[in-house]
Image (spheres, rainbow, N blue to C red):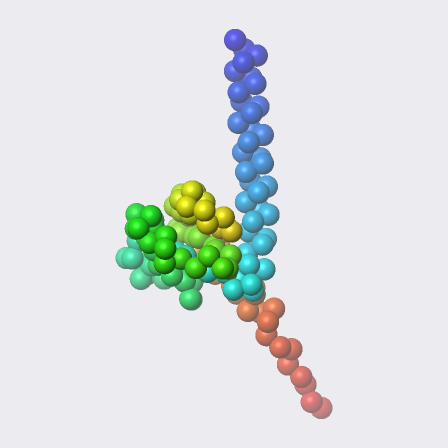
Length: 131
């Protein structure tokens, strides 16, 4: 009995580590996806969205997502995000179940904003100093 319990704990730990590594990899891809013109979808409520979000984001609350799948462009990568990443994970699953596979869970909207800021700072031309 002890061996089975120990094995279950090990499986959960390994699964958590692999999930974390995958999330880190995905987060490091956000600036590249944004440069590629990713569609940014905020799946928080409209009230939360009105309090602040990422410029250019589309607001499709998670509970309305299944009814609005046809409105989502599929010719570009998609980044879904919310307050913490939980609803975004659910949104990613809903989209993938509807054959939209190029979807990344961006985590929180602030996380996506940081990636957007990084992208914009990389795109700013260097200032030329004339002496």
